[in-house]
Length: 416
Image (cartoon, rainbow, N blue to C red; front, side):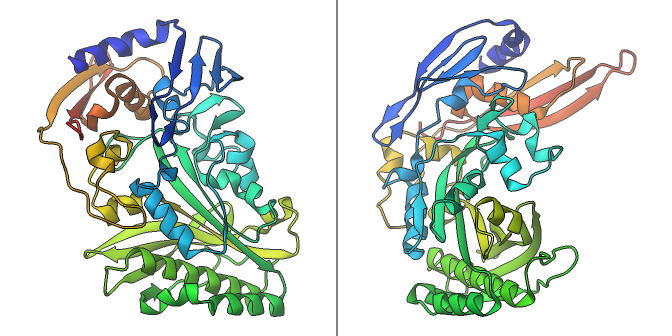
């Protein structure tokens, strides 16, 4: 039945003209927005956003704005957030910033090029050409640096159009951390050494670190930095991250952390951090030395700093043993009552129903095709009942040259 509805939805959605008003689902830990969607505008909590050719955010996604799972004390995402914040106990915290941002904040302020692939309409949720739902907490990095705090953490929900499977969801949660010091060869080293000696970093002593990274043209030192200041700041970054990982994975007696080179537009040099968990390497976060242009924008011309960003769902799925990312959005009491603030406890499954598989095929329109658009349709029609969407056939007719796709949709409720 749902597959039939989806086929109809694909063919009729473009010509529908409706006005939709929704009051976000309310629970003890959610504050869904009051929003209205018409042909010409989107109104969220009283503020109006004019629609244009960039508008692609759906009511389904808007209903999840302001759910704030990361602020519910008993929720696994919030428990991970609290553990990290308790580790960096002297950091200022920001965790209630609106996810509606400008494209300037989300891209330009972070030195992301105008033609960079991360700006694509198919990968983001746009209210209009200049306004969007943030794609990362880095959108508030300048805001944090301008706050006057030399150490801060930002956490919140972020939104990206993506594939459908057990580890991807259009809304997830990130945490951003930034630290900066005086940009002076002597002062930087002194401040870093003093901070490393603090008791909160002692966990790093029990971590086996694999780090073969070096400064090189592909991952360079910035022109305005010196080898002395870079070495000090990078040492502080790596020691801080290693100790945080040690705290989160306290039950892993022989924890291994691996550092590898990476690239991000707003840091240089940049790294990704992986941990060896149950015999497999797992990517945990990205980090690096903040680009000095960003420090300048924040008015911190004489400072040097580092930043890291991590996904809270990824950590929570591993540490709590949660097999499907949809479960984080369940309002079934059997889910949330399993967890205790400040404690990591393994999730006990309670769904007893097997999956239901349906195949759907259709001819592609003449215009360009984006798979993320199809996944968005599936989510709008079937909601969280869909566990996975997989392309199983791609056919081009030899005479008409028309192209047909067949997708396999796996339905399974996680809380029935």
